[in-house]
Image 1: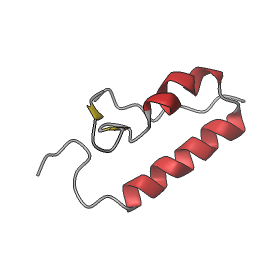
Image 2 (image 1 turned 180 degrees about the horizontal axis):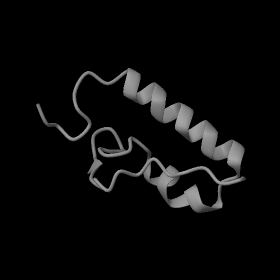
Image 3 (image 1 turned 180 degrees about the vertical axis):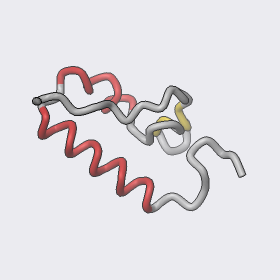
Amino acid sequence: MNDVDSPCIKICVVDAGRGLCRGCLRTLAEISCWVNYSRAEKLAVLEKVAQRKRGQTTNPIGLA
């Protein structure tokens, strides 16, 4: 299968300071281009998201 599931968790709020969606930790460009990305590009975005999660000290949506 060539498709990769989107990391979207339906919490679509962009943190203006960071430029990232608080739900999936993708940039607006990564979100808008997702459907046109190749499998390799999607996997690269997922790796960036994983790195962002590891560098995060608080919950992405600001909950305790």
